[in-house]
Amino acid sequence: MRKWRSNPWAVLVTLSLGFFMTLLDLTIVNIAIPDMISGLGATLDEALWTVSGYALALSVSLITASRLGDLHGPRTLFAAGLTVFTLASIACGLAPGAAALIAARAVQGVGAALLVPQTMTLIVSVFPAHRRGAALGIWGMVAGAATLAGPTLGGVLVSTVGWRWIFLVNVPLGIAALALTFTLVPDIRPARTHRFDLTGVLLATAALFCLAFGLQEGQRYHWGAGIWGLIAAGLALAGAFLLHQRATQDREPLVPFALFKDRNFTVMTVLVGLISIAMLGLVLPFNLYLQSVLHLSAMKAGLVLAPSSLVSMALGPYAGRLADRIGGKPLLLTGLTLYACGIVAIALTAGPATPWQAFLPATLLTGLGIGCTLAPMTAETMRHIPPHHAGAASGINNTIRQTGSVIGAATVSALLQNRLTAELATGKTYAAAFLTTLHTTTALPIAVVTIGILICLLLRNHTKTPTTAPAPSTTPTANTRNASQGPAGH
Image 1: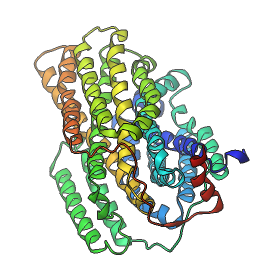
Image 2: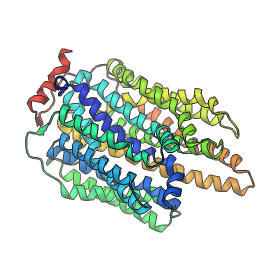
Image 3: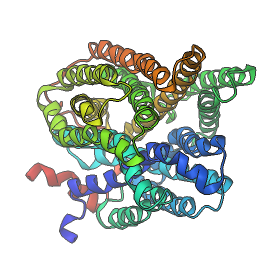
Image 4: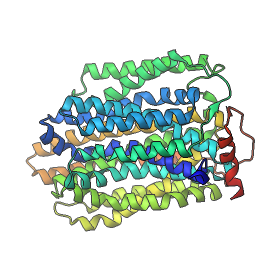
């Protein structure tokens, strides 16, 4: 094992394992909701909170966690996040009732937030510039694969060993990732003491909580005055946060505005939110269609979605390396176009009694699209970010990613419920009403992907990474120095 210590690719595997678990838990629970309701005697509202509680805790903690990584070292925070996440997974799997499960899921979300921003920071630190695109490409592929694999793995576990194992499966993975962290990942420490912007953290946390809670729970509370008041408060707090950040740009802000001088970082930050909206805008209604209209089991519904996940996982590393050679712009435009075509194909294929095999070409097309998109998107986001801004950039990127997921879930849920209610009121059968609803809701991810294609036209395409020296920000240990030098000789 000693020969792998601080090897960049071994570090990447370790980081990807932890990152995969946290994103998998965003989607794996959806498919187990009916079994959790019956197993715990819970209401639908309580079961849905097991999903939204996790997403809410993750959303509001990301920016704070990225700053804590700058203060105490990214490996320390990554290990702490793994520990919290794994212990909370045990609590989820053993939860005696709905309230205990919701509380444990919120703690899981905090653990995920502690570790997620550190992954990009460590990748930027241990990989040289000319290999960073491939590494971040794999990281981005893991993000997409986890989102898509959730329903598949969840369906298999629920149908074979029971819903509690969607949480308990994290335990051996978390223990393995924790052991690998202390064995392989270098302990990068800041060269100087960083300040902790308590005012900025409180404003950002409050703003994200109000916005995320309002969007997630809007449909449940019928978009009443209280929800709109909460969203308005979130926007006001976000404005106050930005004003505070403007006043602290010379004193280590949580959000360095200098990052947005890089056009590609700005474009990719918008795109990562759009992609999150589009992915949930497709997966949620399509999964419901497979189970409620075609009456597939949770396992079969998950397997229908599996080709998309497998193709994107296989393609991601190659797309990341190709982005280093030819630039990310052509790959992104190709991938987004393929993904939009795949969504259209799914909508056109869906019928009241469509055999599941008929969806294979469409799901392969979406897999190709995501595989060509996520890896180059991540590579372009971080391509020119200096190491001393990597933590902040990672926190911003992941916060926007998670906010997009919240917006996507809230929007598609509202569309589904409102459209389905309207169609059923006309006297249609449930299957006919849901088909019409599915065709309507797919307009959301198609529109979002189209916007993504248009903003990608603003990208500056780079065929190779500049060789400028990064600004010094960390004092690496001997292991870190070895990690930085290792790939150059490969």
